[in-house]
Image (cartoon, rainbow, N blue to C red; front, top):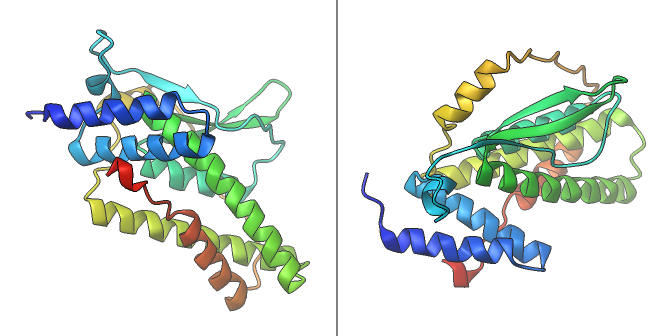
Amino acid sequence: MKIDPAVIDKIRKILALAENNSSLEEAETAALFVQRLLLQHGLSLAEVRDDGNGGKTVEEARPEQVEYRHVPWWVKSLASIISRNFRCEAIIRTHPGGNRSLFFIGLAQDVEVASLTYNRIKTAYNASLRRFIQENRVMDTAEKNDYTEGFLSGLRRKFTEQVEEYALVLAQDPLVREHIQSMGLRKGRKSAITRTFSRRAWETGHKDGRAAGGRDNPKQMT
């Protein structure tokens, strides 16, 4: 496939902005736009960078420094949504002593943007859940789970709409698939979730999840 040099040049300029920006928000927005362009044009970061190595590398990234004794079900669900939309794989590693941590596996730019996006949306979720609890005086864990299920559903739907709008290709790179297969990972057990099936909680969460996933790119980058 012939690659348009103008596209390569545009991605390189935005990538430089993402890597050399003191503003975390602007750096993340630039990184997300780089990711979108890579997906739209079927490119990898190795094909864009002029670093002379000419190869792709599979990397692991730990998006948060938190260690869990038991990983919350919603953390696993959120990581799964993010990894699927950024061509990565989300895994849970167990440390000596039994604590667990989340990791993303994928190509360099993919894991970088997946980590940025995961942290932004996790922060948005925690803030939105606190607001919902305070405004509705919610104390029941099951109703909080209803809100969370709605949030994840809204986020998933927003990402799906973006994939359809921009005709993005989300297939993992063959190198990433090969690497993951070689790891011999075991599928974790599905978490049991208590719910009240509150329509109010689910719909509020769904609206907040869509808002969290709907970050637009700045006009100067389009």
